[in-house]
Image 1: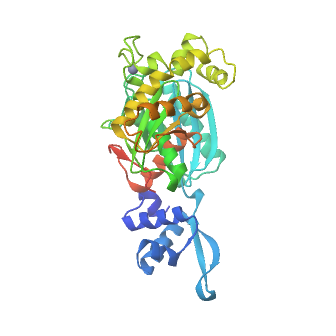
Image 2 (image 1 turned 45 degrees about the vertical axis):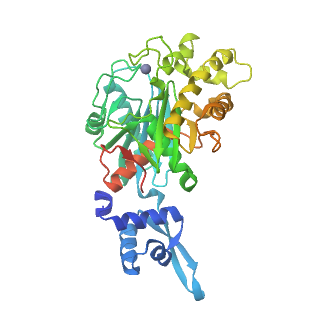
Image 3 (image 1 turned 90 degrees about the vertical axis):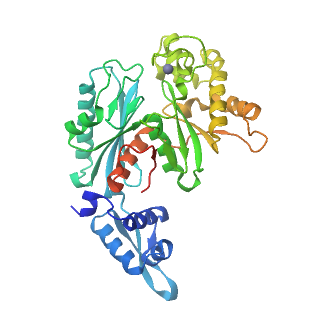
Length: 389
Ligand SMILES: [Zn+2]
């Protein structure tokens, strides 16, 4: 195994060259030299290391000036893999993701509320199966990116009594999963992981700032600034679902009148005695018997969205998460009208909410964060995190 794979980028020029190759798609050494402003010798040495460790590969010869031909370089998608895991209230999603962010394998199963160790054993077993099925050698595996609902404590790697997770009180999930699997684990909040996936998917067309509304069984969010997530001190920023909008009922988080206690997929599913997945299936149809009840709560969401936009003034608002794209048709018009009516800067510029583009976003974002961490030595205690590879 090369030192690079073992230790990640040891100096910033390696990082710069790798990133330039990835962003270019295909590039020659001479073009790399021009774009990075490094010497040809430095570029050649770093490219040799990247090829040696198989993070980068040749893409054949291309014509250059004066009829000369030069080797074109590209990122080797098989150079490094990670597993992304979404541990949700309703289900677990597990994805095997390559170095270019392509989901190679995806599985989901229902979250049967059980002991944390049983869930972690399950994650561990699926991880081993995927690595075996795709014949991924140990040295090409960066580890597991795990995302969960908050509150998390990314310093200790613990999950701290997430609402509606029986048996999950201060579970040190990151260290325990590392111990169980023998692989490094990155822990982050589900909404943050999904916003990172959106950044990754949009690449250069991503705005410099956006607020990501995360629709799962509950409602979360993530603030992106300069292509980084503002994670907050312990990793829990963006909890718009726990803004108080009414005087009752008591929320699963213990506070009173939170948005997601008054109006969320989970709330309506409980009221109508069905699963969240079944409710979403129904809401996607034109004649859902639950539509009126669902739409009656949208003004509460709009109030929270307008307040968030007034406080942080992001360029865009993006509606995503496991159910975001599927329910967006019922929400986008209402939210856009509310922003045009009440947003503080409405007379300066259009304020729009749009649907997310990334699929399996939370899993993808978590896996890419793990790959990022293994190559860049990021620690788990930064308040701003981004995908810098
Ligand atoms: Zn709450």
